[in-house]
Image (cartoon, rainbow, N blue to C red; front, side, top):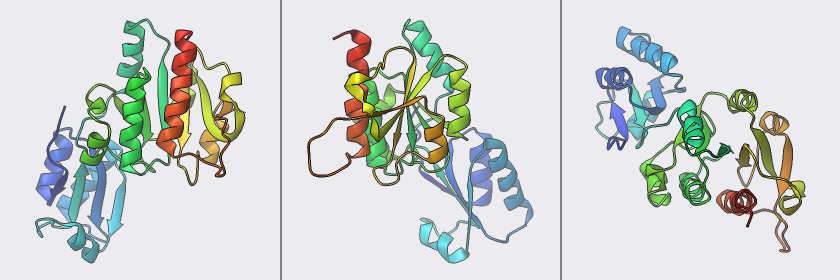
Amino acid sequence: MRNEESIIEGRNEVIEAFRAGKSVDRLFLLSGSSDGPLMTVKREAKKAGVRIDYVDRQRLDQISVTGKHQGVIAYIAAYKYAELEDVLKSAEEKKEDPFLILLDNITDPHNLGAIIRTANMAGAHGVIIPKDRSSGLTAVVAKASAGAINYTPVVKVTNLRNTMEELKKKGLWFACADMDGKNMYEQDLKGPIGLVIGSEGSGVGRLVKESCDFTVSIPTSGDIDSLNASVAAGVISFEILRQRKGY
């Protein structure tokens, strides 16, 4: 469902956004403030599992569009996030093994949008992003997805590693894209699978990588040692599709 607002400013406005169930991607709060309304904002953010960035007034003034932020600014997702159970249910209804793409350290909205587009084309049932270290579902992400955001659900979780452990109990295996991994053409990528993709620079975080069952690499013959994250996600996703379909 589309939500045209991207920034909400002001104490009452932000409180009402939380209570209305809007998806808040990021919250900026005046550091050191302890008045009633801002404490209410903190409580609502905690209940929703939203990260709070405490900043000074100068920073808030820089971010503000209206100049009337009252010590609080919230970034609202352009699209609603999905629930993990709904994504798994969708795979079950299609009588397909779940295929999920999990992203770690993907902060560029263009990369996120491109991966959502790839996920749709490769038959993935959903994309999972962490609360921190990730771009949210901004208008830029929506545009880069070329409309795929309307069809491929995106789930935002508090802890990627904990989510992986939960999904393992449901039968999923996890493949981590890593340049030192096993050649993807030599790896069995069929069955219930989660593909974990990290950023081009820092890659997948250590703890998340340790939670993966195996690593997988893309064979290359060029002079540089890495691919853009969205390109890597695309290449491996379509190999997963090929194996699943028996092409």
